[in-house]
Structures are given as C-alpha cells and as structure tokens.
Image (tube, rainbow, N blue to C red; front, side, top):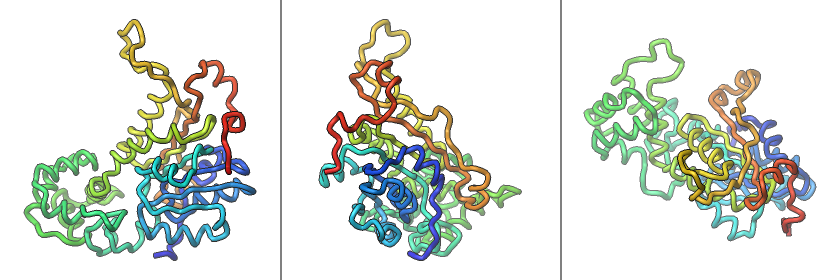
Length: 333
C-alpha cells in the first residue's frame, strides 16, 4: 500500500492559503501520504517545522518515506486530530503559523485497502482509521436496528432512500464484505440509471463517518485551532461533502463575528469576540486541469480563515494583515 501514488488536492492553493514562509511552524492534521506536508516543508525551508497527525498508522508509514528529506524538521504523530490540543502541548508545538485539515480519504485508503473504505475491491467491512478502536462498519451493519441504520444513512450520507436501504440490509444479514454490501444497496435502490455515482457511495460515506465519529471530531477540533494559531496564523480546511463544509463554514463565520446575539437583542449579552477573519468568502475549488488529472478532487471545497487579536478593535486588525508573531512571543525554540 505504501507504493500507491499520492496526489494531494489543491496543493498550490494550500501553500498560498497558509501563507507559508521560511522558518514557519505548521500543523497538518490529516497527514495522509504527506503530499501537502512535503510542499509545506519545501516552502518553509530553511528553518520550517511541521507537526503531522494521522489516526491511520499506514499513513504515518507512507508519510515518513515521503518526508525523509525533512526528518529533523518534522514530527509525525499517530493519533486522531481531535486530540490536537493535547498533542501540541505534549510537544510544546504552539503557537503556529498555519493549520491544515484535508478531510478526504487519501489515495492510500482508496486503493486496495483491506479495511474496506472502497467498494471497488473485495475487503472486510472495517472502515476504521484507527485499527485499535472497537466500532467497525460490520458491527454497525450487522447489529444496529433498521431505524438506527436508516438514520445513519440519511444523516451522514444524505441518502433519500435510507429506509429502503436499511430494510434491505437487515434482510440480507449477515454482511461481511464491501462487495456484499454494495450489491445489497444496489439491489435496494436499483442501478445507476445514467448517474456516474455508484448507488452505494452515500451509504459507504455514512458508515465511514459513523465508524470514525468524523463530524463530532471535526467540530471539536475546529474549536481548538484558535488557541493554537498565532496572531495572523491561517486555518485551511478542505472538505468533500456538504456535511463537512457546513460545519467549517458555520465555524468560520461564527468566529469572524463580534456578537452572536439574536438581531432583536438591543444589547450584546453573549460577550463573544471575533477570533478570526475570513480570507475567502467564496469557496476555493480545483481547476478543470486538476480535476482532469485527479478526478477524486472534483468535490473538494477549501475555506480559509486568519487568526486575529480578540482584544483588537476591528479597524486595527483589518489595517494590519501581516502576521505579527515576533511581537507576540512566537518562537521556534
């Protein structure tokens, strides 16, 4: 699996959005094969440092090879990014110039992976990023009630035929492999009918999200980023479906406002202060050329925000947009 070619999505755009600079310190929360991390290190040299995190031990092994030229400037941690704050405090890796989250499955996981992330290959229904956790896709498929399955498929897969699929899954139990499940879903909803998307795509997405608790982990992680970024540091998030993108959009919009009280409130009672400003109000998407070279990038959506001083007045941080780490105690030591 380590030999699979890894194509990082929106590579140039990520480096630009992070405003990567020599001597900067960066966190890649979704290390994957290390493609983004390698580009960040190349542009932050000399003196750049990177903390790479991934719950998948296979990703850590692949990234270690890809980042072999930067061994003494990178720290790779096999952990879930939901523990971001603990990891950064453990290794004294904060504040930082930039944090990246690329929420898509890597080429490594979509290849002939025995954990069953893809229905293109025969594999066990596993879908765990962390092989040590208990919940698996097979456990959900074979033990959850019909209503629980339907709720997962509808909520996390945004599948209109969730109840029909759940009913068919229960009838077909036990289901142990990816191809078995894909066939059951296809039998429940019919063939593709001219669509390029396989009918099992949303169901597989829903199960993967449920197995790894991806949406809750994303919300929790986003909340932790503001305290880890230095003033002027950038948060860059690439999402691949509307559930992820909605969470990212709402977080960035909320943190870019000084008051979250309802419009009818005459006086602010929440006391909320903006901690970020939006860099791009419109989502950044791959070029047609990139989509042609890497069709998996088609659904990628990138959003960018910059950490600001909560205590500064709006005009103060809008006029001075350059990072100000030096005067706020930022150090690479």
